Image (cartoon, rainbow, N blue to C red):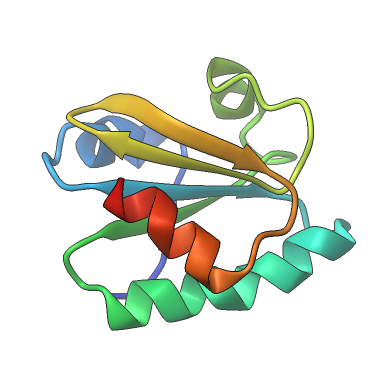
Length: 102
């Protein structure tokens, strides 16, 4: 499944989908974000059971605030509409997949 561009207008649909959701909070100017982005893309392609979305914190400051984003990249995993895990900073693909499985 392709990575979704998440914004205020589609966030509620994603949140209420019932699927496990991986959200990547990023900014275009962020170096570590550019390192994580292709990993998130790979996870989306290889794991269609998950919804994978990216949120540009410069374009969606309200969503970033709602999730308490203080530093990027920040990854958040949601189940049943609730955040079950977050991590800040660049992570290897294996660690991101572990977040989704826990």
